[in-house]
Image 1 (cartoon, rainbow, N blue to C red):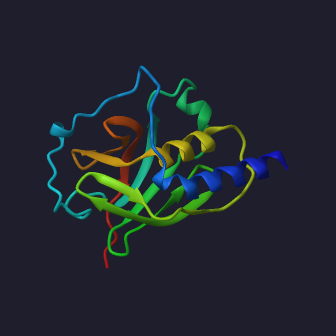
Image 2 (spheres, rainbow, N blue to C red):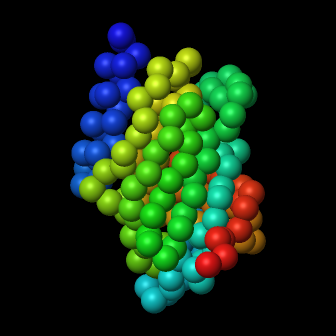
Length: 166
């Protein structure tokens, strides 16, 4: 029952976090310089190679080892540029919603829907919290995606599948 309440609270945080102010207190956070990824405000998701399936490889500055947070399946995020939809797996539950991209600025719609299965450990909670804070993207070599809070890296993904063919 506690896990259901916790997951419900996390879902509420996901839905309510879009307009929250964001701060970072970790001193070991990675910083990504905007000048290292020149992107004009006219750059689309397709041009940035955002579309496709990405697998989480690192939660930046997390004190628990990654393999302990996600001992089985790794979280994923999937961007579908045509309908501006995002979906994925937290490693336990699935989520879906909309997104907008303006240059490097990323915003998720008015919240995401998420399944509510009880999950072991706190990997899902950490992932969802970081996903909620993300407001910028950085893509390196079309294969590494960083979700950022300003210039501070939160989540690092590797591309595992390209864009859909319509």
